[in-house]
Image (tube, rainbow, N blue to C red):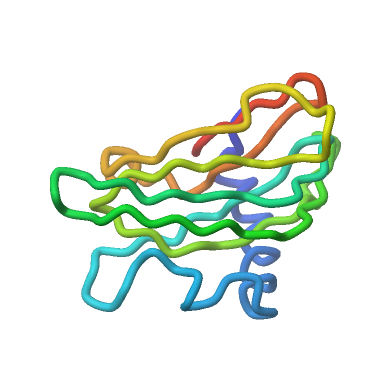
Length: 142
């Protein structure tokens, strides 16, 4: 189940603190000055340990160039019991399409990939999170 607005408010201070500590930096961003940018929180709310998250920016009607970045950070999850899982923010260009792939410790199975489109940004979506147990992972957006 996606996080609701009140839940986002609970993890927003955590995400801000992580960004301030350097978990997301300007050189990690996919969006430069002058672009239409949106901050997206990448959050592990699963029982699995996320070892990295690969984000790919895809060409979108000629508005974007392909690029990718792998964020090699261990993101501990919560198993769904509370909202204390690890997260980081990344700045994305609202005109581009993105693919998010969560990499976990070996043996964890399930759907670990999702996409963000210009339509998702227009709908106000700003959260990508991994949910579930190690054998039944699922990525959701909100």
